[in-house]
Image 1 (cartoon, rainbow, N blue to C red):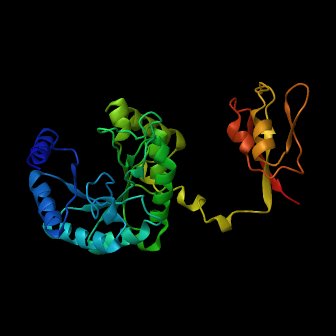
Image 2: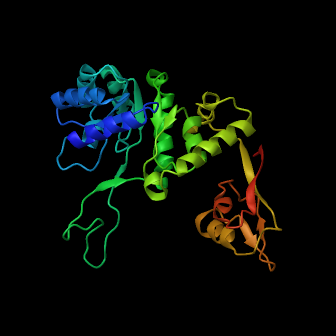
Image 3: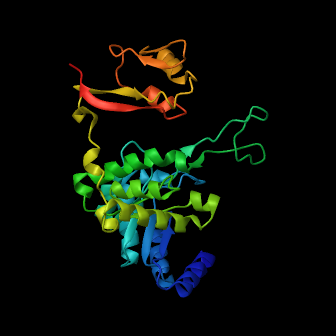
Length: 317
């Protein structure tokens, strides 16, 4: 703890114009209060209450807290009693619905959410010594999975939070699989006012932040958007519950035969995993049987040459 406090003081001293967020995690209410107070004294501008770390040595800590709204509320309130700084509640994805815990955090005094943390996982199984990575003297454990593979899961939880009527005015700091400016823009378009990046920085270094900033600036300029605020939440109206989707129209696949190399992947996938709506002729170019096609776009997704795209939406009748 002392070392971390020294780091915070040095960061604030060396970069006084930068926003400094201190992430804390306690084991009881007194620790949450004390840690929040110490972080404020060390120069933090925002406190992040980590209710979601999956790499804990005991039950009832870390991500276990984030699954219990009562604990989330009481620990948030404890942290609030120790500081006047803004508080972010960092939520766990190891849960069916994030909204109850998020609402509890707001009741406890949180000013915003941070989501998502890592996903509990077993990385692999060695078929030589029959344990997983990391191998610690022949044993392993569940741990947190991060990186670009978790982005779709993160976006789903962000959308859930931003669509909840009780949370619609609560700021969200988004994270989970952000590597490029496009990734960051997607989180912002779903309502995040800030984003966080860790795994990509660990892999590629801090220089990627310059790329993210320049990419976002170019996108905003080319799109005619006057700043980040104009992008925040723009995608929310376009993502609805499944029952609201149009079931009376269909997009048949469109084929660009100049790009097709005749690999047959679309045919194979449609034959074995789809609706047998493609045939291959002697020229190895796919042809569509429209009456069998349901518009699933499996062929679009498997084509390595991007020679298949969704066609215009037409009536099924």
